[in-house]
Amino acid sequence: MNRRTAEVERYTLETQIRVQVDLDGTGKGKFRSGVHFLDHMLDQVARHGCMDLEVEAKGDLHIDAHHTVEDIGIALGQAFAKALGDKRGIHRYGHAYVPLDEALSRVVIDFSGRSGLFYEVEFPRDRIGDFEVDLFVEFFRGFVNHAQATLHIDNLKGLNAHHVAETIFKAFGRAVRAAVERDARTAGVLPSTKGLL
Image (cartoon, rainbow, N blue to C red; front, side, top):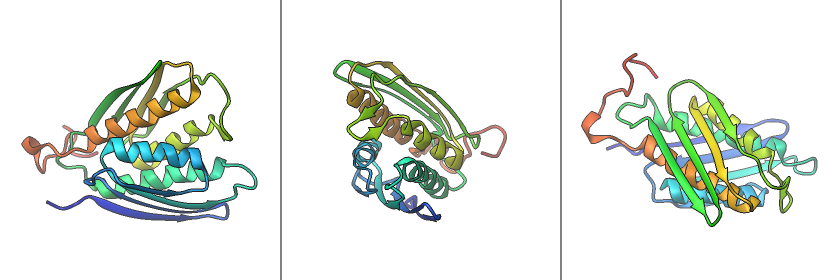
C-alpha cells in the first residue's frame, strides 16, 4: 500500500516555509518555526495524529508571529491535500474529545472538499508566554482553506490557557487521524455519493 506523503514549500516576501507530512507515520515530529509555542502544539498534532510531521519556517518575527503562524497553516493544509490525493478509501470524517485536567475540547473534521472553520474558543487570557492566542484561528483558517476541509473546534471548558490550547491541538491530531485512516471495507471507494470530493 502506498504511503501518503507530501512536501510543500511556500515562499513569500514575509515567510519561507517547508512542510513535510507522512500520514502513515508513527508520530515523529521535527519543528523549527521560530514560534516555540506553535512548535509545541504541532508536536501534539504529530504525536496524537500518529503522523510524521516536519516544519521549518523563517518569517518576519521582528514584526510579529502572524504571517509565520498563518503561512504554516496554509502550507500544512496544502501538504494534506497533496498527501490525500483523491481521498479514495479514507474514513473522511473524524472527531475527538480531549481533556487535560480542567480543560476539555472537541474537534470534528470532514475532508469534504469544502473549506469551513467554525471556531468557538474563548481563552482566559490573551497570551501564552509570548504567543498571542488570536493566532490559533489564523493557523486553522489557513489549514482548512488549503486542505479543503470543514473543521469545528469547540473548547467546552478550561481555566488554564495552556491547557485549553493543548486540548485543542491534541483533539485536532486525533480527529485528523480518524478521518484520514484507510477503511479496509471501502478500499478504493470515494467516501461520497457525489463521486467527487
